Amino acid sequence: MATLYITASEAYSGKSALCVGMGKRFQLDGYSIGYMKPIFRVARCLGGQRVDEDAAFMKQMFGLQESTATMAPVCVDDLVFEMAMQGKGKNILQIIEKAFVDVSREKDIVLLEGANNLMQGFVIGAPPYEVSQLLKARELLLVKWNDIRDIDYVLAARELLGESLLGVVVNAVPHRQMEFVKDVVAPYLDEKGIKVYGVLPQERILRSISVRELAEAVNGEVLCCEDALGELVEHLMVGAMRVDSALSHFRRKANKAVITGGDRPDIQLAALETSSKCLILTGNMHPSPIIMGRAEDMGVPMILVRKDTLSTVEIVERAFYQARFHEPRKLARFDEIMEKNFDFEGLYTDLGLK
Image 1 (spheres, rainbow, N blue to C red):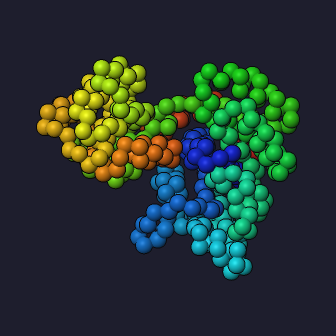
Image 2: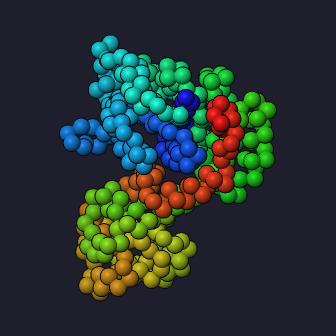
């Protein structure tokens, strides 16, 4: 059995997406897989129990028999941190090891979705390298590309993990930098003994969020077109300009959400004349019947919020940053990216799999 511990350089780097992309290919190639997220922080309640959303999604995606509580055995909140600092914490490594026995039974490959970075978990006695060593895993480091300074993190990870580090995947590389990362960065890391299994391009659809998720994030009231709440929003624009420049401004981006004041019908009409997936109206001011009629004709949801424009923009930007990967169109596109840009055969060879 092979065990892969997927860790990252920062939060929201795409660990869940990578687990899905690899897991689907592993199953397609005939391998039985297991999934585990040893430690998680963000939970939702399901049947009176705190459940990790990623574990629940992976269970459904891969048809796994283990419970979500087994696949994600340790929920770490502020209370757990405080108890650990007072010497009253549980033996988290022991809990993880016990759960791993169940998720790995009769599996060819187990995917461990690890920490957001290699510095997490020390307070609770479960730093990533100890969790990985305990479960006899090899680490796969996911780096969300920002700039050339990200290479320092990769080299630091190699110093910390040593030969246990299997390799690196570089994610969300802007298209204009793909050639540089493939032709310069990857060979440099290879010279340092760090294999690059994939260089994955940045894609707007993978960073998108549904209209429904936006409405929930801003705690907004959907005024019309509820059947379009599943549409994906790829861009955010703020309507705070003069009306004579609004139309040309909004035409610059497609598949967008427009945030504007509820008292700006001129801006609202301009936004509705371009490729907008929804309008978010701030200040708790309802649109006029003319605006509502036009929105319904265009099939564009209008979302009313109580907050001011600046506060709403901050909430929406955070929602984009934290957008989940569980949307079918995102999954299909990521499959295509992985097929084209990930070295599965090299990974199988390095894991000792046929």
